[in-house]
Length: 215
Image (cartoon, rainbow, N blue to C red; front, top):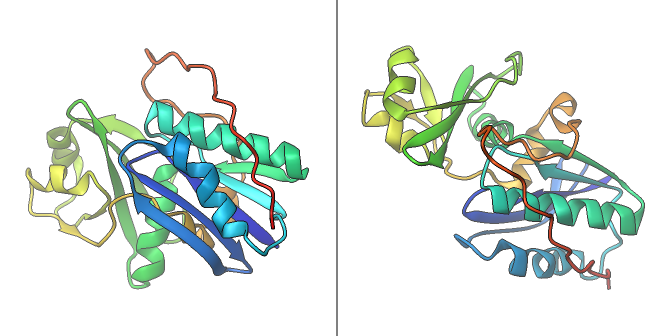
């Protein structure tokens, strides 16, 4: 079953088509901003000469408010247009999946992403995915104080935490759509609703985006 994966919660614009655990096509680009303008053309590029996917998976956060809204709005619009299911994962799970997929010997990883305003999003995830799916927002120094000395970090926030402790790290900066091939099924079934961890955030109306037509 072909799966379209959309990730727009951070500085990278990342989309991929996955079929049976294999990456069929991928576009991963660090754009900073401008996800709304570039997302649909990127998806259309993946679909050139291909049939629409049979399901859609989107990163629901935590992450940038604007980025998450763009990705989720696109996933919902495409799901309606193609009459396929839309489910969600989290940014930390997607990041951890990449770390485990590229480093099979890892037993656990701390997925850490820069949340801005001097904070990070963090989740401890075991290789058997037996964690509690609890993402926390902490100052880097506070997270470092809570971690064991042998903690293994990954993500754009790792460098901020490592300033307060000599923790090891594995490669990985932003969540990558193609890494969803390593996600367990249980981490692909969330509702596609933005996962805001800032209780003061007020979601803005979701943008309307054009639906690409497969060639």
